[in-house]
Length: 241
Image (cartoon, rainbow, N blue to C red; front, side, top):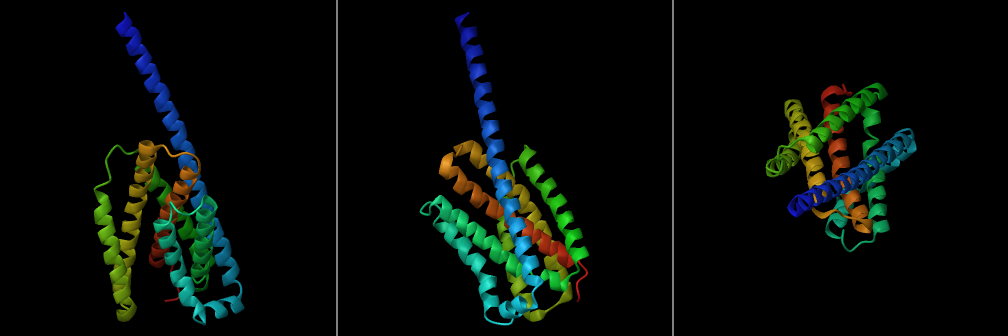
C-alpha cells in the first residue's frame, strides 16, 4: 500500500515538474520570438527611413561608411558571442538593438533594387516558411543535432561561393547560391529552434541569465529569417537585373 502511495506521489510530482518546465519553456520561447520580431520591426523601419532619403543613401553608400555598415553587425555579433557572460544584461540588449538597426541600414538597398510589392510578398512568404520550419523544429521528436555540422559546412561553402561570385559575376552561380542559401537557412531555422528548446529544458535558465540567453537565441533566429528573406528575394523578387 505504501509502495502504491509512493508511486502515486512520484507520478504526481513528475507531472507537476513537467508542467512547470512546459510553462517556463513557453515563456522563454515567447521571449525569444518577441526579441526576434522586435528586431525585424526595427530593421524594417530603419531600412524604410534610410531608403526614402536620397541624401542618406548617398552619404552612407557613396562613401566608406558603406563598408562600416557591411561589417559592423559581424563585429557586434562577435562581441556578443565571446563576451556574453561578461557583459551586463542591458549591454547585451543594447548591442542587439544596435546590430538590428545597422542591419536595417544595410537592408535599405533592397527598396531601391526591388519594388515594394516584391518586398512585401517575399516577406510574407519568408514569414510563413519560417513559422512552419520553427514549428517543425519545436514539435518534432527527431533529433536534428546531426544536421548542425552539415549546415555549418554548407554555410561556410556558401560564403566562399558568394565571395567568388563577387569577381565572377555569374547569374547562374547567383541562382545556385540563392537556392542553397534558402535551403541552408531553412535547415538552420528548424535546427536552432530545437536547440533552443533542448537547451532550456536542460538548464532552465532564470533571471538575467535567461534574458541574455533569450537575446542571443533571438540573434540566431533573426539572422536565419533575414538571410532566408534576402535569398528568396533574389529568387522571386524580380529586381532590376
